[in-house]
Length: 348
Image 1 (cartoon, rainbow, N blue to C red):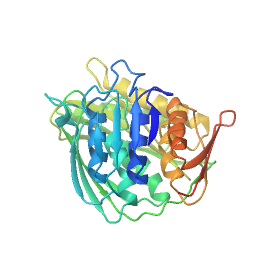
Image 2 (image 1 turned 180 degrees about the vertical axis):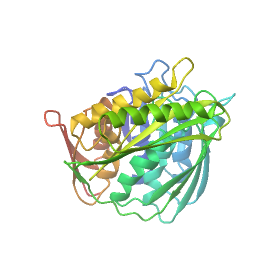
Image 3 (image 1 turned 60 degrees about the horizontal axis):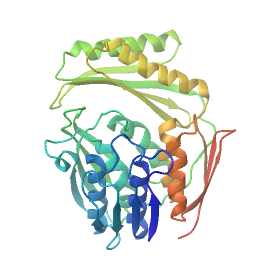
Image 4 (image 1 turned 60 degrees about the vertical axis):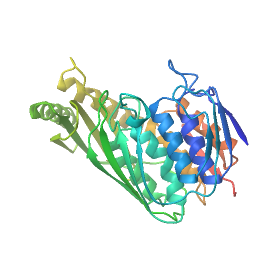
């Protein structure tokens, strides 16, 4: 049994998600206490409970403590992860529904399914573009392309946009099993090729998305940057707006986004995302702050070592490294001076 203190490091859902993935992959039983102790509302929220249930489903685990608000969890896999067709609905985890982040559930089950014998299709319902979590657009345009380079064949299809607080979004995930992961070397990103983007609204006037796109294009053009921002009105059960930028470099991708809210002009939404991109571009790093911790797990499961340079050493990164090392899968060195991460996998 592996015992983890959920209050370690950033004290959020990172400890839970990574440890669930690793328990499903390795078959090692797991106990977590003080789940999300660092958050204002500690314990399992809807998306975390759904992640627990999803991980348990794919590896037939016995679970104790799987209820909303629980700060304690025992998770004992019942066998190897099984490929198949699954549906996981965050909104079903709480009476009255939830806009909890469906992409956090995706990141929990993706690698176990990629390593399983056979292909899988997963329907994920809930929030697809909500605060404090990777939007589906980032998963599609940054995370999965980087994982493809490491040997993971997966793609997502967005069927409906789900914003906070309504949720109601739907994403299809297709995963090719029997993956063999390779390490990644990303110390240099090369030159910027272009900046692509989507400015999206649902159940709002189309001119709002056009205003976001126009402002982003203007800011990028002022810096002589090649860009292509598409303005679209899409389907969703609730009103929402956001802009999502992808910077394509010679050797890597990075993503930046901002969500609209009542009282925030469309132009300011675009400015928030552009400022985030400009700050990253000045850093010279190949790996953005979000991808930095998301690459750790596939790198730890690879057959060769990895190294990459990041824009920032975040608490998510150091927390994720700690969790992985508790499973004995890899030795992870984080050089805070040079902002470099090195992962040396250990044979199971």
